[in-house]
Amino acid sequence: MPIAMTLLDGETAHRLGVLTAKYGLFPPVAQKDPQSLEVKMWNLTFPNPIGLAAGFDKNGEAVMGLKKMGFGFVEIGSVTPKPQTGNPKPRVFRLTEDRAVINRYGFNSDGHDVVYERLIRLPAKKEDRAVLAVNLGKNKTSKNADMDYCDGVRRFGDLVSFLVINISSPNTEGLRDMQKTKALEKLLDAINETKRTFKIVTPVLVKISPDLSDEDIRNVVRVILAKKIDGIVVANTTVSRPASLRSRLKNEDGGLSGDPLKEMSTKAIKTVYRLTNGKLPIVGVGGISSGTDAYEKIRAGASLVEIYTGLIYEGPPLVTKIKRELEALLK
Image (tube, rainbow, N blue to C red; front, side):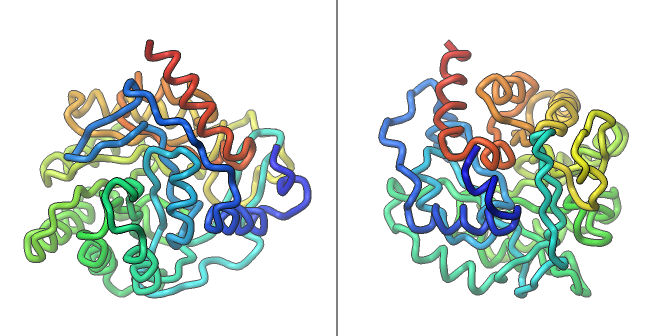
């Protein structure tokens, strides 16, 4: 367990982790990824399928440091059009006994302009850059949520490898309602029109909640397929609280991530894969802390996977550990 876990509160430890990655203080991974882990999708080449989920580097401060830790890709964000501070503190709680976290950050973001300026300073050569995704959110006080997402697509579309539309965080009031059929159709129509208007070809994915019923997932998938969206991220944090939770902090408000989300996420991946006949690329997220966990998500239908909470409990060596174990399982 990283020493920061024992000395600092959750948000301070998180901030320290971002700064440590930003300034390259984590030891870089020297060895090249084996060919067996390479993934080709959307005309992109991922050196390995293990990515960093959105929520860690919210503002694109540490992309290159994270790449050097061995990630196959890095997803930053969520990024909102205008800067906002998010929800009041404290808003991050470690459920150590459960290897889980509850957060209610609420899209705290430096905003499009600041994050864009950071990203344009990344290395120009393709071989030196990370495969990078930006997770897009909406401002809490926005009068036009669709426009917030379209602004993000327009701003970052030509700068990054792919974009993720986050309409499933439980920490922004009303956000998850955008997963409902009419609202989702309207949003995706607006995004597709933005892509056409500005000639943006960057893949766009939608990130969904693990709390959707099978019928809800069916409706979401139907819309995503009809609108020719490029992929789906399964899944965000959950507002459910499994009976198995032991921590005294288990009833804090917010989204639960980590080990307790593992089975729920895998079940949702299987459902999406079945409904799409394997034709829609899936990024699997939730409770991954070993090569076996990653392999289960891949076997369920994911082409790529992402980690975050496991990193909190095991630190940067987790990335290499997962890749090593996954390579052995794939032989």
